[in-house]
Every structure is written in structure tokens, then in C-alpha cells.
Amino acid sequence: MTAWWGRKTLSNDKGFTLSELMFVVLIMGILALVAITSYRSLTVRAARAACLTNQRTLYDAINIYRANNEGGVPATTTLDFLRPYAGTWEAISVCPLDKSPLSFEATSCTIICPNHPFP
Image 1 (tube, rainbow, N blue to C red):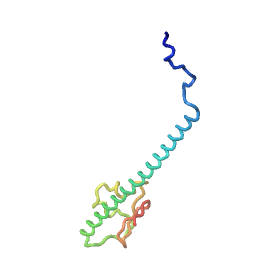
Image 2 (cartoon, rainbow, N blue to C red):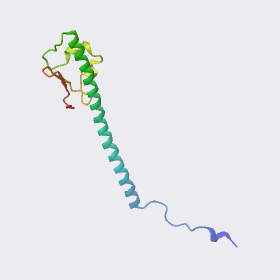
Image 3 (tube, rainbow, N blue to C red):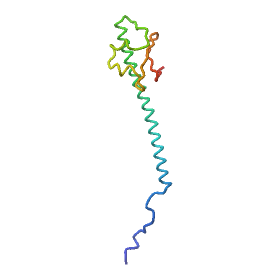
Image 4 (cartoon, rainbow, N blue to C red):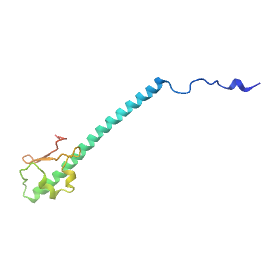
């Protein structure tokens, strides 16, 4: 007896069909879309958190300025009066998202970011 009965016959199935490949490409596209969307939202959230941290640092600098100048702040819209009181000035005086300068409202003593208005 020969051993031909145990062998499988070879067919012409040597690759994927077009529908299988399209299905795989569709799934990869959906996964890429989800990854890109989550990356963008994480980038904006990180910039917002960095901006909030910068504002807290600037509020500390305002409190130091008030302690040194008998409780008053200048009536200005720029934060340049805080330059000697805050370290790494170029990094904390701008919004991390697009590097636009933060503004200052002297009447309410608030720091305003043009991209992230905090309540």
C-alpha cells in the first residue's frame, strides 16, 4: 500500500480574497480613526492642564507681588510686572497650545487664557 490516501490535495487557495482584504483594511481604518481622535483630545487636554498650571504659578507670583507692594497690583492687561516674581517666564506667560500671550484683568485680579477660558 502506498501512503497517498493520507495526503491532502492542494487547491488553488493560495491567498486572501478581495473581500477579506477590504474587511481588514476597513478595520485598520476604524482603529486608526479612533487612535487619531483620542490623540487629538489628549493633546488639547494636556495643553489645558499645562495652561492651568501656568495660571496657578502666575497667581502665586501675584500674591508675592502683592506682599511686596502693600497689596496692590498695577492697572495693566499684560503680565510683564510679574517677570521678576515668576521663574521660566517665557514658558508660563503664554498658552501652551498656540503660544498666545496670557492677559491680566486688574480689577478682578484674574489671568485669562485666550484658548482655555476657565470658569
